[in-house]
Structures are given as structure tokens and as C-alpha cells.
Image 1 (cartoon, helix red, strand yellow):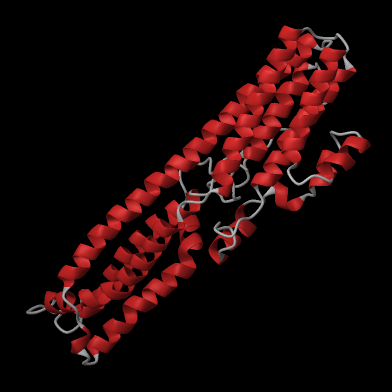
Image 2: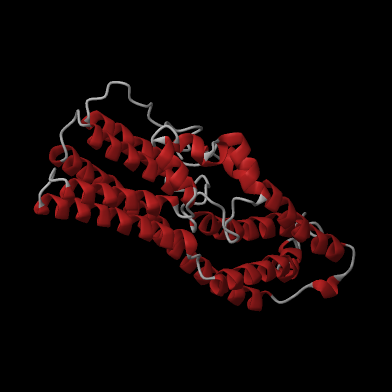
Length: 335
């Protein structure tokens, strides 16, 4: 998540540099051919204006849907924060207090759940955009993704006993199995008489809320923005950018009639076609870069930072003094 006031012009330029060169080339070729006598290349501007209007509505719809997905993802992790704190209070105050080894084991297993969940949410999907060259270049120069740098088993090893670690690593959905272990532990506490029926019910409800949070996050992760809408936007964008400079050739040629620009005003077509096409393309790219809020882009939900914040809060509940350092933004980007 970008935490600065805005992206700087340099960041935008670097992010869109490769695409801008292609747009500039597409605008330059027909303009140069028209200048050297290929006047038959000129197209009427009215159909392109209609296409641009329709495309603006489609891009706006896509960006609105993208914002809805990223806002829902933030709400889900807001629930993870609240539900984690509620669960921690219940465990601490019903299962033996701050010094209890059982409480500490449940707390640390929860840290493992937060870790396993964020690692699962950062796994790449074929429809995500972090593999694009422009995004890869921006990633290399501006921030890093902790889940891609470190191994899950090494991080989980600091939270789980060796037996549990081996068991969890043998499972496909590690986060789900960690919550299953929590449920087993709570059931064992009830069976052994450490907690009563009411306390067991409250703890189970806390685990159920965490399962709901995980399921909602997995739904957004595993269900992409519908590919039919995304494909239509891509194809129409390509047609519009390709035809735009052809539709403005006559207009910019006539612009200089009777002035000192006569015969040369056609070259303004390169500048203004590039600007208009760039604006449409960047708006579409912004929507595409926000539509997958857990993929690891600079516009993602900062699940690493949120997980660390929850861990610090819960360790503080046990009066631990050796707390992990909070995650801070790197080049205004928080992961």
C-alpha cells in the first residue's frame, strides 16, 4: 500500500515508460506517413469519439469494481484485527492467565495462522499482474515482498513446536489446519475441566469468526475480476489506441491553415494522440493493478504489516518485553 501523499511524476513515468513508448510509436507512424503524402490513411473522428465515450464508461466501471474489491479486502483484514484481539482476550482470561504455557501456545499458534494466511494470499495466480515487466521493474527498485523473500517453514518454526510444524507443513491449506488445531486445543481444555461450557462456546465462536475472515479473504484471492469484462476492456483499449491517431490526422492538418504552422501542425497529432491514449491506458492500468488486493503490488492491502501489528498487540497482552519491530514503509510502500 502506497502511504505517501501521491505517486511522484518520476514513479508514474518509470511505471508507464515501456507502454508510453509503444503509444508514442503508434501515434508517430501514421502521422509521418500522412505528412509524406499518404492522406488516405485519415479516418473520420466521429466513430472514434463514440468508441472513446463507450470505453470511458467501461474503464470507469472496471475501476469502480476494483476499488470495491480492495476496500472489501481492507474490511476483511480489519475484522482479522478485531477478531484476533477478542480471541486473545478470551484465551488469556479463561485458560490460565498471562503466565500459562497453554495460553502462550495458543497465542503463538495464532501468529502461525496469521503467517500461513498471508503466505497463501501472496501465492501468484495466472490472472494477476505482478508478472508484468513494468510491475517487476517497479518492485525491484521500490519495495520487497517478505513472503517472496523468506520460506514459510522457517517463519513457522519460530512459532510452532517441531511436531506441530511437521504436521502443518504436510497439509495443503496450512492456515485452515492451524485453526483446526486451535479448536482441538479448546475442546481439550473443556474436556479436562479448565474451562466451562460457556467459555468453550465463546472460544469456539472466536475461532469461527477467524475462519469466516479467512474464507472471505480466500474468496477475493481465488475469484478474479470476471475475465469477460477484463477482456472486452483490453480489446477495446487496443482498438482505440491504435485508431486514435488516424482519426485526428485531418483535424491537426487543418489546424495550421493560414498560419505559420501550415504544413507542420500535423505533428501536433503525435503529442495529443499520445496524451489522450496515455490517459485512457493509465486509468485502465490503475484499475487492473488494484483489482487483486493480495497479489503483492504497490497498491495491495498491507497484510504483512497488519499481521505484525496483531502479533505485537498479543505479545503485549502477555507482558512480553522482547517484541518484534513493527513493519515500516519502504519508499512510501507498506506491505
